Amino acid sequence: MAEVAVPNDRNNPYETALENFDAAADALDLPESIRAMIKYPERVLIVALPVRMDNGEVRCFTGYRVQHSTARGPAKGGIRYHPQVTLDEVKALATAMTWKCAVVNVPFGGGKGGVTCNPKEMSPSELERLTRRYTASILPLIGPEKDIPAPDVYTNPQMMAWIMDTYSMMRANGYPVWGVVTGKPLSVGGCAGRDEATGRGVFYTLECALEHLRIPMKGAQVVLQGFGKTGSVAALLLHSHQAKVIAVSDTRGGVYSDKGLDIPQLVEYKRKTGSVAGFPGGEPISSEDLLALECEVLIPAALENAINGDNAKRVRAKVIAEAANGPLTREADTILEGKGVFIIPDILCNAGGVTVSYFEWVQNQQHMSWDLHEVHERLEQVLKRAFWEVVELRSQRSVSMRLAALMLAIQRVADAVKVRGLYP
Ligand code: NAD
Image 1 (cartoon, rainbow, N blue to C red):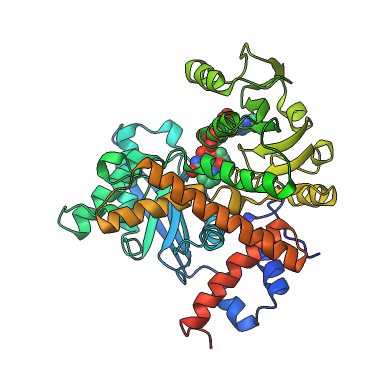
Image 2 (cartoon, rainbow, N blue to C red):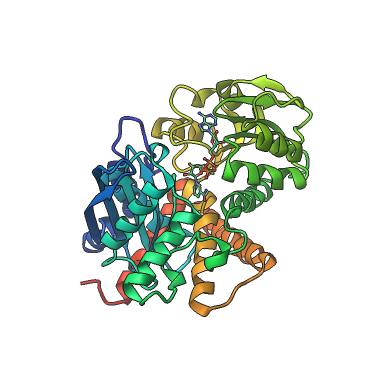
C-alpha cells in the first residue's frame, strides 16, 4: 500500500505536502506534464506592511498570499496571523485547501494568506490598521471571482468585515462587495451556521464512518482532545445523538467519566471558567492518558502533531476523526494504520468550514440568504457524499482513507486542467 506522509515535527510542512502529492500522483499514474501544472502554487505574493503602532512608531510586518490552484474555481483559504508564519507554511496550507475543496467537490481552488505578527500583543486599532494595509497590498490577487480569503488562526469575523470594507472602498467606490471574503459577521453578509460548521462536518463524517463500520452511535464511547470551536460543537452533536463522550481535554487539563460526561453542562462550565478542567461531573485526566483510553472514537481537535511516534502505540480507538489539521505525525499514521484504525483524514473530516464558506459566497453572489436549516441540510449532503466517494475509492484501490481522499481530490483538479485544454 502506498504511504502518504503527514506533517512531522522535523519536516518542513511544504515538503510534506509535496511528498503527499507525489504519493497520490504515483497511485493515480498521473503524467509528469500534468503533475508539473498542479503540484506547485500558481501565484505567490510577499508584501511589506508598514503599520503605525499606538505609540507612534512605524513597524513593518511581512505578509503573504499564495494561490495554489485556480483550476476548479477562485482560490479559497484563510488568513493566519501568527509570529511563526512562514512562506512555506502558507504554501503548504494553500496546497491543502486545493485538495480540501476538491475532495468535497466545491468549485473552488486553494489559497492561503498570513502575516508574521503577534496579534496577542497588538491593540484592536493596530490590528485594524494591519488588516486594512494587508488587504490593500494583496488587492491585485483577491476578488469574488479570483481569490476569497476567510478567517484562520487568530483572525476573526471583525477582521473579515475590515477586509470587505477596504476592498469595497478601493475597488467599488464603497459599494459593498460581500463576496470578496467569507466568515463575515451576519450583518455584512455572513452565513448562518458558519461558526459551528467545522464541528458539524466532523459529526457528519463520523456518522458515516460508524455506519460503515457497523458501530452503533448510541452508546459509542468518544474521547476528544480540544474543546474549542470545533471540538465542542462535535461533542454536543454526538451527545445529542446518544454517543457517550467519556473524556475531554483542553490546554488547562482534562475530565473523564466512564458513564459519559454531560456535554451541555460542560459547555456551560467552560463558558464560565474558561476551561473544562475541574468540571465537577467527572474526574481529572491528563491529555496523554486521555489519548490512551479505550474507546470507539478519538477526535483530535486541538493541534498539529498531537498524536506522534511516542504516544500512537497507546491509542486504543477504533476510529480517529481528524478534526484538527494534521493531528497525526507520519510515524503515528503508520503505527495506527498498521493497527487497523479507521482514520477520517483532515481534508475530509474538517471540510465543513470551507463548505459553509462556499455557501456564504454563493448567497453573497446571489444577494440572498438561506436559513440555518437549509445550511445544515446542504452541508450534510456535501460531506456525506464526499465521505462515501472516498470510501468507494479506498475499497477499489485498496489504499488508506488518507490516500484515497488525496487521490480523489488530485484527480478532480487534473480533470479540470485537462478539459479546460490547459493540458499540453
Ligand atoms: P480553538 O482555538 O477554538 O480550539 C482549540 C482547542 O484545543 C482549545 O480548547 C484549546 O484549549 C485546545 N488545546 C490546545 N492545545 C491543547 C493540548 N495540548 N491539549 C489539549 N487541548 C489543547 O480552535 P478550533 O477552531 O476549534 O480549531 C481546532 C483545530 O481544528 C485546529 O487544528 C484548526 O486548524 C482545525 N480547523 C478548524 C476550522 C474552523 O473552522 N474553526 C476549520 C478547519 C480546521
